Image (cartoon, rainbow, N blue to C red; front, side):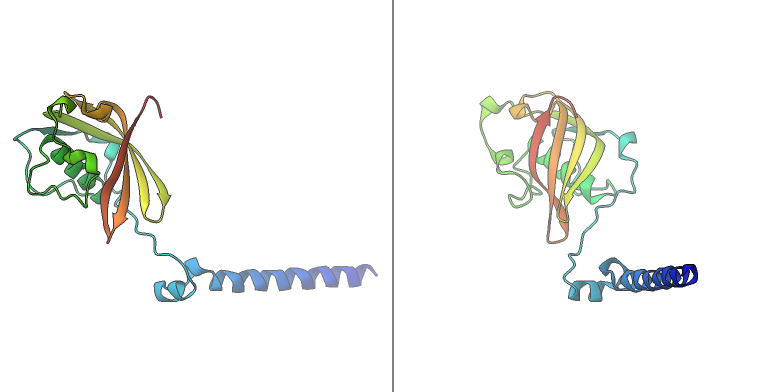
Length: 173
């Protein structure tokens, strides 16, 4: 009786070990990209996280910003464009499809800043095409309260490029 029980137990272990291996081979994350797409998997576009963000503070002054972006990261470049366009929304780089609409508001009462800085402290993926970028930011204007303190940039991936979709401030994170 005990021998039959041990043989049955051994057979179950062998079957489960073989089925786990087969499941691993068929799992979408183990398939080539084309096969994964045939299985209905989403392609997740990962931003470049290779830069040590917490070590870099990016600063901007009206009239002293350079064209293009040399930050080495699509995430930092998306926020770079937001900063430049907040300082001067009439710049040729400022495209309405790459920034929130409020960046293009033209009203003196908004107290648009002339100096800004940010340091990325955390990047939080939301889904395959959206991330939140937590920053410590400074500015010398009011700008809806969206440039001083703990500012979070919501970035979305549009056609393979990260763009700032929304911005909000938090007391603490």
